[in-house]
Image 1 (cartoon, rainbow, N blue to C red):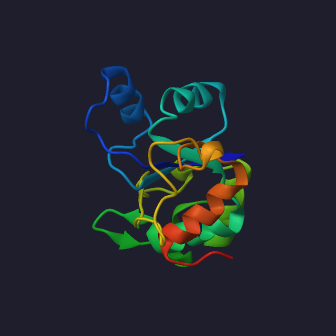
Image 2 (tube, one colour):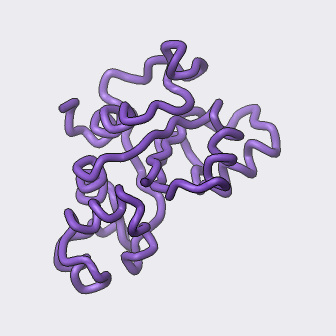
Length: 159
């Protein structure tokens, strides 16, 4: 299983340990997203950064939309099926996205792909940037609900 992690809050007033954790997660700016495998070390870092990020399990369809619309190569070039077939063991973006969402592959399996997905702010805005998701805000773990947020952030609308 793969977590989609989105940074919501900026960098003003961060304590050094939180700043380091967000740097290890490669979340340098607000609205940046990374796809991370489920592991004990990732879970610990997410708990440390829970007041600045939101995360959940990504679906294969949303992972495919993220890759098509927001994944970039050096030179700010988008990826396509031909590039995926030539630079990985996967025949298409959809098969790569399915393997990515189930945890069988990572973004490193596609040569040259940048590890950060730069997203737009969500259509309709965040629910609240200072409260946890369970308390009516946007921060922390949200499970499968991350897919609706990601769709709003890539401009695909809510399915």
